[in-house]
Length: 270
Image (cartoon, rainbow, N blue to C red):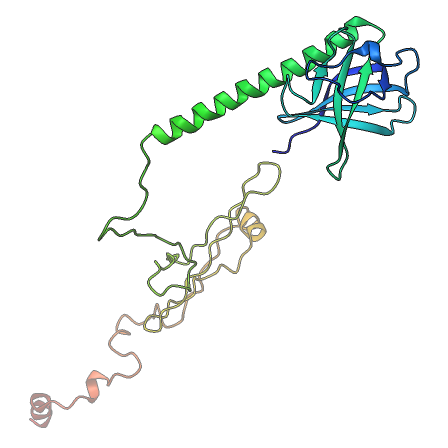
């Protein structure tokens, strides 16, 4: 995750001075500067980006950068307080090419200089605490047992990959619907369920079922027949003959008189 630059301190008025070279190792003195004639006046901002912090001097109207002082640690040579005042400092400014120079800065109010020191101290305390926590986390990871996820010798793994029907010959076939009865259709909107009509069974090549007999009378004809007298079956002329011997003399049979009989013929001759 990328860090964002945050402004931890802003002072709208800061004075900048050109200072003479250091005459001794004891430190700087603000009394040697022309305090009533600052060389530049502008705004001071302290910006933090991750573990880095920078003092920036820019124009308070246009925001144009005048100079910046990267601070690696505090106290250090980058920000040094003068010996004779608590409102003035000597800072080391740098440009993009690596050149550096020392200038003096000061505030009209002593509280502004105090806020600058507090912002620097808090930043490096927080950075030191974060560094210690990172070191502890790294140490705990090193001391914790490492999980070996590698394959041992002779160890195998089995993966089952599901395939569509038709892609794999060994895939389980789809169940077939029997009896010609189709499945239910999805319910229509509104919660009414309508089942599909059953499909007619396919005729077998060995057995041909006769079509069911259909009545030639409609429902209306049946209702009309309820009030009519029962129909009288027609009487056949051959079903009830007037001759009681008609059963013996029906068509296709020979009359009894025409049957030759030896006894009868002998009696007639006698």
